[in-house]
Length: 204
Image (tube, rainbow, N blue to C red; front, top):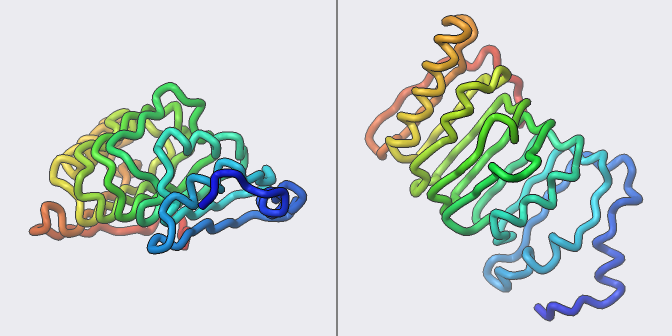
């Protein structure tokens, strides 16, 4: 796609006037142009009322997600099928996502995630599915007081090990009643474990 966008396209990308807009799904046609998302999404103007965003096939660089930090009401973020590309997401120097409660990665090629609890202070649910290269979950998430659940599916054993460390850290601090739910399926592609979800708000 031509990087020089005409005025009509730019007008379509200006959604700030939609003051009641709360949910947005942004997807591109992967087969036709994998760079389309990276061309359009940085130019997208969104109202601060947005609470839920799903990105799919947008092929953003991880650092480009910082453009979503300005959405002060954002509670749910789903990154699906090459929404972001690259081996490392480093949020340690960002302001973070202060209202985010639900974060999902699905089929991403990320290998390393560097973050602290300060960037995700209200995170309740973390879902990592088919992220087979991801080796680590930020261990500082063990200090997230509101974290209720971590779900892993088709992920590495090292990621599961850190999730267990996070759960143990919560158990030491809060006792068994305040311990998060850990759901792990097909870890290392040969194990299966499920636990209850009674305390977890449904986001779907």
